[in-house]
Length: 170
Image 1: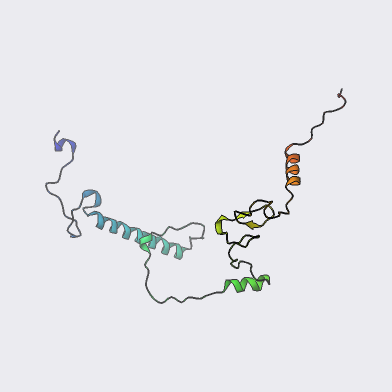
Image 2: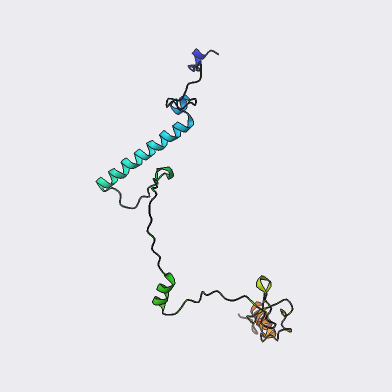
C-alpha cells in the first residue's frame, strides 16, 4: 500500500522540539519532546485550576461540599522562617481531668517470684502476674487461681442441661 492511499505520511527526517531544547519532538506531543510536553500540560492544568478557583471565589459557587484536587507540582513552597509554638498536651489533659496520666514508662518486666528480668519471654499466668520460664507453672509460684472451678464453669457453659418432658403433650 502506498502512503498516499492511507493518508499517512512519514516524516522525511525527525523534527526537533519546538522549544529548542535539543531533543526530538513528536506530532502526538504537539511537536515537543516528552519533558517539554509534560511541563506545558502541567502549566495548563495550573492555569485552569487558578481560573476556576478565582471564578468560584468571585461568584461564591464553592460551598465547601466539593473537594478540589490540587496537583502536587502546582504548590509553590517558599523557604523562610517558621514560627513554632509548643503546647504541653499532658499538662492540658491533667488540668481537664484533674489526675495525672498513667502513661508513665513502667520499669523492666520481672518475674514475681525470683525478680529475674524476663522481657519479651515472660509468661503471664491466669492470676495476672508475670513469671520467668522456671516459675511459669502454677505449682512453682503458688498460684491463687482456682483452675478446678474455672474448668467446671467452662464445662457447664459448654454443656447445658437438657431434660426430657415427663409427660407427653396431647
